[in-house]
Length: 50
Length: 147
Image (cartoon, rainbow over the protein chains, first blue to last red):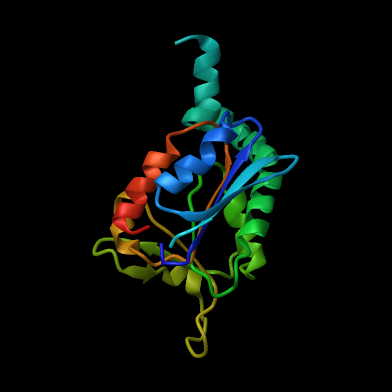
C-alpha cells in the first residue's frame, strides 16, 4: 500500500473474530491511527499506513 | 469428516456446485450490510486504487463498482497474465475511445502475483469475513511485499 493508504477490516457478528485483539493485530501489521467502529452488523477496524 | 461438515465445506469452505451457489447467496445476504458499512468508512474516492480482498461472492466489489460508476459490463476489464503487465481484454473493451482520462476499471489477480501490485494501492478493504482467520500475520506478510 502507498504511505497514507487506508485499510478497513469488516467483521460480521458471525466471524468469531474477538474485537479485543483487533487493534493490537492491526498495529502489529504496521498500520497506525487505528480505531474500531461498531455497528449492528458487527465491527470494523480502520487504520492508515504511515 | 461428518456429513454435516462435508455439506458446510461444499457450501462455504470450498464452494462447488449447487451447494456452493446456495452458500454464495447466503453469504451475499449476510455480508452486504457489513460490506456497505466498511466501504462507507473507507471513503473511497473515484481516483483511488483499491485492493479488495474477498473470500465471498463479490458483494463488496459490486458495491464499490457502483460507487465509482462501473455499471454492468461497461467497465474496462483487465487481468494480469504472463509478464504481470496489465493486459486489456478486447472483448470487454468494445469500441471504447482511448482519449481523455482513464475510466474507472476493475482488475483481478491472484495472491501469487501480488508483487506486480507493489505499493500501488490507496485503500484496502476486507469486509464480511465469514470466519476467523490469521489475518494479522497475513497482513504483515502483505506489508512486507508492498501491499
